Length: 457
Image (cartoon, rainbow, N blue to C red; front, side, top):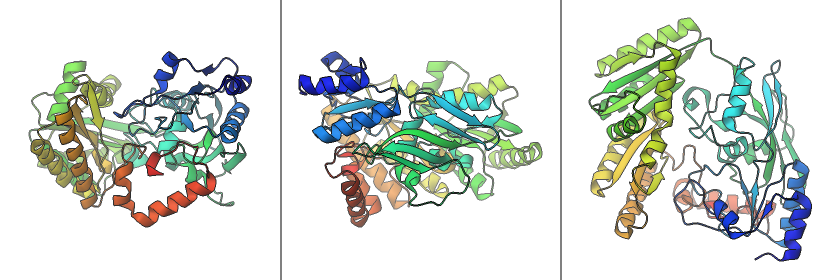
């Protein structure tokens, strides 16, 4: 427990935006992962970058663990205050500082909601492509820290591909400027790159310069229905193999289709074994050409193609995909979403592995995901109070990740490592990489105060 004198120092910096009562602290003892609750000792919400720097400096001087938190939507335990300490809420830094249409970039504070930035940019005729499923709640700072992906990542890439620069404070509260507003910049170390996927372990980010792109001139969205999920999986591989890169190529299995339809009533085919949601965009002529080729591949593999004829129909399709996670979450007290990712050509093999593991451990699993970039989300529905089932769940997760690595994949395509996947990290990157990361962490944060013990560091 922090002393009254120390709490007063936080209040001197952040005013009334300081909380220490148990009922307030409990609100920040969890995130969207399924781990145990970790209660912080104090929660502080700065409203300026200057306040952030002072809070970081105070935590360093007083040896207080510091966990930076946006909306808390991450699924890997990245914002759990494992060692207590201070939770630093970034939602007070929520200003879009600049949208430059001539040089096509935006400057935003870390607490800006992703969807708010997307809408503001769209109103000026530009596109900010990263669109994580949580974009209506998640913050830009969190997106950068976790290198969030999204439905358009197949063609446009992930958050890290759009970070031109970032400003952050190191553990001593020193301001660091990384990158900037020019397309080319090779000045010094690539510190912006260092902060991407850093999960709050290396510094506290306050501001980001993000690349924007022109909005596509045309698009076509389609729903493709299959009576065999494996044929849908093979379709994904064949589309990519045909050198076509849709903007979006999403997959849902029978269980997920049925669950989403029960929750939304938007007309999904509940008798289908699997479906693909596909969108191509770009120049009108290219869109028509790619659409024709994709339709031919889908038909060859038994897929029934339905085109979204209106903007309303298109929005309904993507709403169905975005509600997959929340629909599944209605069924059981505990939802565990994984994001094992494999090379796109290995999607059919990975889907078969997930099916086999589900049967082997007698679990309820819905699988959906960004199949076009190999990023699958096998989602286990369980109750963590059921100890026998949780033993099987843990074994199933072990096998899912082992299978992904065996297929030359990764344990995380877009949700980070945090605390939930720390034990698997070395199996992917090797002991030498872990030692290098630890040296880096020790050098920048020798007292291990910044989000301690995440990634096993």
